[in-house]
Length: 450
Ligand SMILES: Cc1ncc(COP(=O)(O)O)c(C=O)c1O
Figure 1 (cartoon, helix red, strand yellow):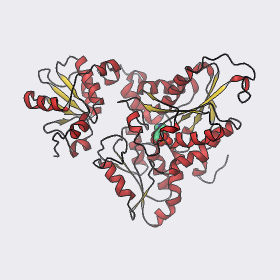
Figure 2 (spheres, protein in one colour; figure 1 turned 180 degrees about the vertical axis):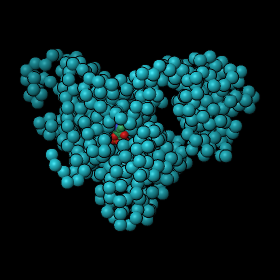
Figure 3 (cartoon, helix red, strand yellow; figure 1 turned 90 degrees about the vertical axis):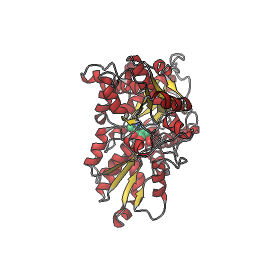
Figure 4 (cartoon, protein in one colour; figure 1 turned 90 degrees about the horizontal axis):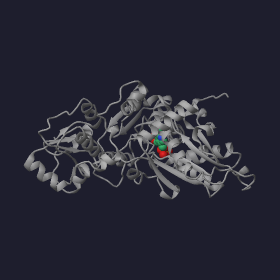
């Protein structure tokens, strides 16, 4: 295989069968589409190249900067592509949560600007959100930027309509699989592949995977956030299911240890979600010869996307499953809080919280990013960002039991986890602000800027 340019090596990734002894499915062949083998390491290489290519030489001539709202793989691919063409690259994000990726972006010469944001996903209807305001300035004519606009750009989807989808059909000898399973970030890859597969066979069932509420799986959305993504069309997916960070890491371990596929946690989520979905559908009769002329020997086929590589996620694993890296398990960690504990976490609504603050003066801990806190916060609150708070709590209760504590985060999900954990650790009066700072703001309660 010989190429004149590295960009020619984007696409044509292998489709690899997962050994049935690993997944245990009797009647379904499961294939992994190895997008991690794209040259810059992920499924986003295709979209990034397709989006940026038409404008790159003009951007170089006009001294414009390529810009995108991305915290991960799209930014990485764009940083390389822009750099190769002598064009600066800048990413603007409110969710830079994988330090290795931030370091890599800086190493590649990218500028990284972190903005506050009310959700972790661009919501173009929310004009109060700084990220949205920034997005709007970029779409105005005459900007000094070449904005690739991955959340709305049809060329994101098109990269998969022209590349990923047809490659899968070709590698399955001209047939579409019975199931296609993919994690949903911008929805570009799942939408594009689904479109092609359905043209071949409208019966293809598409499963979209999102991260479990209040959990973080890199590059993908929670069920609430996904509704806000411009390229997301619920009609694309027969099923939308969620995967926890723990399940994603379990899937990642299986891919790495048993299949030799050194993929990141989002790929682990896709594998885990695929096998869980297919297991329910695998109870049919054992395959008989020629039961369906389209499906030799009655076997059915499923394909899932392996979106990126493992190396950037060791810190992610260390934080959530330290025992996997030879460190002692951390009993006082939010990762150990069960769903039942979260449901039972002490919480308080906005109006009651206002009265509580006035009468009992609880310590108000704001778990959001420093950027969000600086923009607006509850008067008198202290800002201890989520990850740092997690570190503090690991060493024991970080404040006296004699003072009540109110925990606040963007929407009340992380704070509920911490409230459950602190209650378990023996704090007698800790509460989570129900609905978070967004509910507080929506109720018209006062917020200050300092
Ligand atoms: C690690 C990872 N997996 C999966 C996806 C999902 O891809 P898409 O944006 O095409 O939905 C992304 C997107 O950013 C990602 O970074």
